[in-house]
Image (cartoon, rainbow, N blue to C red; front, side, top):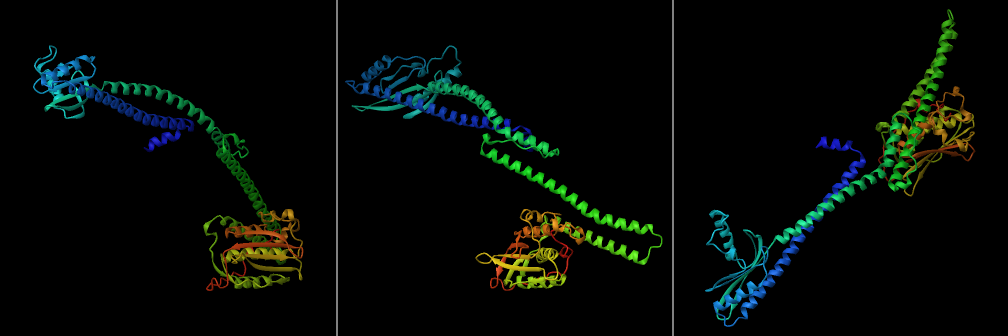
Length: 516
């Protein structure tokens, strides 16, 4: 069975469609043939029964009008009626058995048991005699008998009661050869019509299959080119092939567009990562080569090189850590959500961020409730936003504000808003700042230690929680980053929420983790 399925899978769609249509045509034709074949036989049998019933009625009427009703006169009347009827080898059988006067019939050879046919053996003749005797022993009403030289015969027997107590048995039979001829004609007509229908269905289904599968074959050709590495081809407009095919073609083209963008993004990501790694490695190599050229370098020079190398290694470590976070974003274990007491969580995070720099920190009242989230990842995202605000504000009075709002009728969502009074983000750059390695014009100096991945990590963490991240303009003219998450329960809905304390520092939470 599996081998047959494998062979069918290798057959083209057009031929499979044609085979399916032909199979359905044959099935429907067969069902129709059986119905018509049986219906024709039933209709002809009913017609035969109607005819023999009429003949039996006429014979009975002729016997009943005979006067006087002696057996001899009844036999004579039966002979007159029977012999007045035209008959041939396949005509209607008539007989009447009159007690005391014998039998009257138009087929005496069927009832003769005394003489043998010259061309038949005694055994064959005896078998025919036994079959003929069934005409006399058959019960009343309709019956079907198989008789020699006649074939199947539909027989109607009745007993006619005449005045004076005389009971005459009459029988009328009609060969069923007409049924066989009618059914044979139906079979021949259906065979011819069926062959023509199958041929027409095969040609029509192949033509339709060719037209229907045309866009699919084009898709297969495009997919083959894509598999070979060419991402440029697209499926042409397929509106004339139907709604389903058009939707499939559009979805396929959109998939190729996203695939092209993904490959381009991947290439850009690899190039940017290589560039970001190359810069500190170049500095390290240059400093080590410079130190190696000196014979007996001074202690201060060694300490200077050590300081520079350590700083660049820390930069590489932060970059690698951020890259690992973005890679783990696609994994299931990226998040470990649990109930987090929101007010205590934010307060501890805020207390850890204030000593990082001399700024004007503001934290309005935080809603009381429980947030279902990964506390470590959420703390990482908020620290990145706070570090970004610190990086883009001037000490000591630069504004860094964190606002927390409960959203929805039942407060089922929470929004974290980190605002500053720095230069802000231009409208045309507000979406791109979340791209990996993207830096605004104000943050192109890599000496600050930024990797360009901080905001990309923020959006990744937000989306992993089922939320979103976006940037706008604060009331003071600076940037306003919003991190919105679901799963918040206001105070009173969940009172037993455990407090998860965020780690004080992490590699991605340094002040340098900014949009630049």
